[in-house]
Image 1: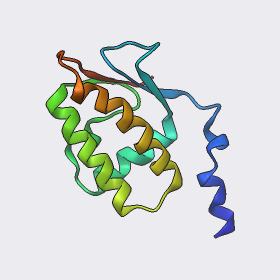
Image 2 (image 1 turned 90 degrees about the vertical axis):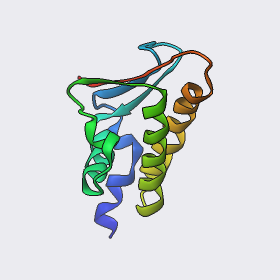
Image 3 (image 1 turned 120 degrees about the vertical axis):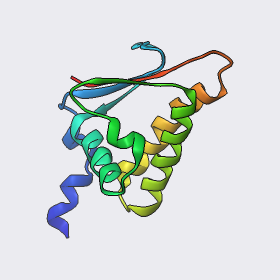
Image 4 (image 1 turned 30 degrees about the vertical axis):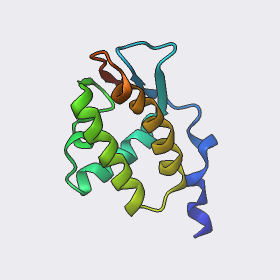
Length: 117
């Protein structure tokens, strides 16, 4: 199993291009960045479990989700976290859900943008 430990080393992904998760397209204050291959890992798990919103994400294009869709995305992320033992997914889910909850608590019609390369 030791030969796979590198897959869980966050430093391995630091030089990769990122997928950006900004609220309303704000790339400065309300955005989360995730390495492409880590985002792909989440997307592939979403596809494997036939989860709706995770399957829609593409690391090479953009998508916009409204508040109702963000609630569902949060549920899908928690589901993935509950069925897969992966420390990087745990880190990602905790961080991205914190950002997504800003949208769900907002009184505005905020949207989540997912911006690939």
